[in-house]
Image (cartoon, rainbow, N blue to C red; front, side, top):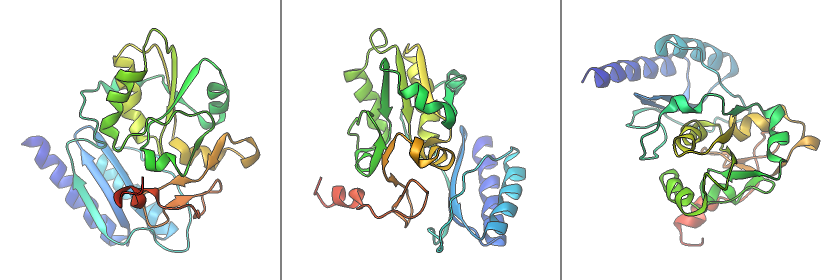
Length: 240
């Protein structure tokens, strides 16, 4: 009950500062941490990040993209059992030392001994992915452990690299693989979005566009609104 009360207090405080600075979007709170995707005027975002950091007692590291219209329309602060639903017990501490900065990512994934796993869902993969990445063809994140059980072996796959949109799913899945006995695990720090932000187009190993969970649907290699189809809608209508 103490944890629930604590999260309720954080939820109320974050909702208040979102309203104060005209911020829209979604914040997810759990005992394991938090995640957010929000939008607002640049100056308001700066003020909100500072205020949210005080509420959450942390220094918030965030990624920015710019668009003429707000991709979110409402304020939604949720309390959930998990930030991203894996339905597996994970020792997050095992993820220490697995992060790879975007500037070093190309070197890691160019190693022929590295198994490159896209930990996103199939409909996200369809818009774009890294060259030579494996598509596990999952419908949801919690399907991924079954894919690993069926297709990967710690004795055979000595080096596994993974990536997702903003890095959140990897924060959970990298330590999960370490817990299964995979010796060398790498996760793209900051995810695809940070990679596209920092790596010049001519050096990128990324191909296509990146699916994002807002009204833009996808972003291109310059983090501008993309033009790709919405495969998530096609899946829901039975076209995939």
